[in-house]
Length: 112
Ligand SMILES: [Zn+2]
Image (cartoon, rainbow, N blue to C red; front, top):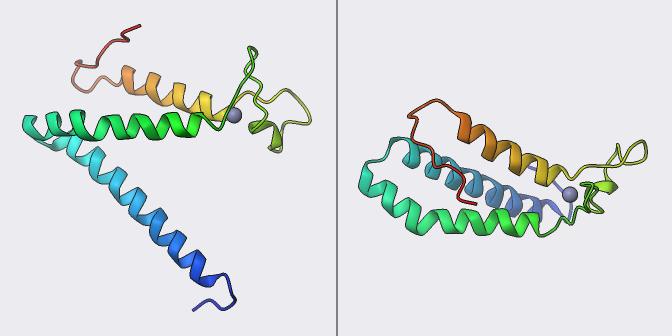
């Protein structure tokens, strides 16, 4: 057991962290392996929530026209070079890679 006044908070945060990751793993698993009815439920009920989460996270970041982000600038490589916003890069990378996965050939094309 950990000691100290913060151990309770750490435990609560670890539970939160685990439950969040469990939830994401469940969503991913259902999306990949669930039947069509499950897919519809996921798309209508869960996808908007996930989009809201991504938006909330990106809301913390405000990259300028060159991608430099005050939030990410606090990081370790910001002193040497302008820091491109890692949150935006990660989001873009994940969405782009997901699009290129050859699994079913049924990925949605970009709407815009
Ligand atoms: Zn950023």
